[in-house]
Image (cartoon, rainbow, N blue to C red; front, side):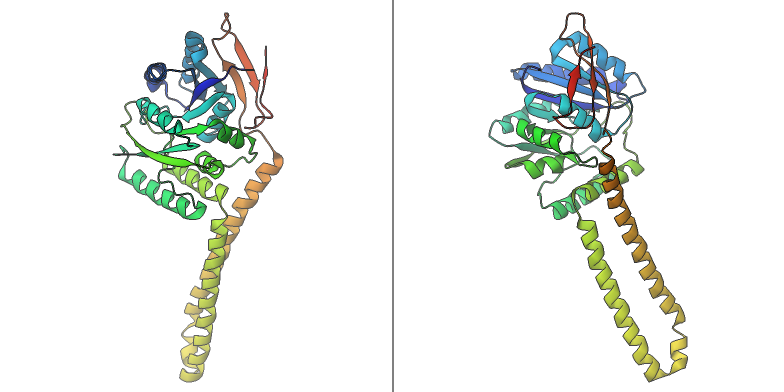
Amino acid sequence: MKEKVDFSLVIPVFNEADNLGELIRRCLLVCRNHGGSFEIILVDDGSSDGSDAMISQAAKTYGREVIGVILNRNYGQHAAVMAGLAQSCGDIVVTLDADLQNPPEEIPKLLEEMRKGFDVVGTIRTSRRDSWFRKFASSLINYVVRRTTGVMMHDYGCMLRAYRRPIIEAILQCREHSTFIPILANSFAGKTIEISVAHDPRLQGDSKYSLLKLISLQFDLLTSMSTFPLRLLSFLGTIVALCGMAFGVFLLVMRFYMGSVWAAQGVFTLFAVLFVFIGAQFIGLGLLGEYIGRIYQDVRDRPSYFVSQVVTGEEKDGSVTSLETARPSTETHSLIRE
């Protein structure tokens, strides 16, 4: 069994070779200066630019301070974070992006708040260095999430967050494949808080989230944590149906009042109403299909990720530990020594 540490730093990495050296240097400096035992867990999410080799080398160089978790292919940011959480053993776990837009120097602020007894510490990016479109989309999604989940946090898109160990254990016991970690953590937390942190521009590389990936992420966020879309669909469907009935009564009254000639001239209006109903049905079928698809994924119970190896510098020979991973659950992650 791994030795407990005061805090773990989990960082998902995908094609960040340009930033990785600086990231490791700054994270080590911050963690060492803060005091206490720590581990930095770098999870390579199927990178193709040599990031996995850099992570393995760092793990062998820095011993117990750095652990490399290498996934066999790209599974997405949240699956990579779950792999890191499963490997962590800190009483407090901090998550961080690898692009250095959230400065590692902000980590002590989160640890200080955790000492006050909070279960989850979220962050709000001040003076965001993103495009206006991303900031607008983020604000809109954050508002929708607050309304649908009832959790009043304001920046779910910021990866820099801190969680207490019982919250991590609860997250790892959840078996669903489509999830959003910050909201899931808040659902288990008794005391949460948000603090302001700095946000720097990206110095190297490009964002890994294209417009389509951002839309997909926000759709996952909304449908994986709430049934609000189905409820909204029912509400809108009722409104549309009532409007259609009212319009039908209006057409009937006007036919008797104005005659059949006037009614014949409203044929295209009836077609328009029909198209509205057809569109509403297709929207409903799409949403129902999304939920049924998620049920299908969970019923199959396939792994959310597969770790090909875990690299540590604990042994003298710098051995590589193989980790067979079935899903992000504390009950299914066992170390198998080669």
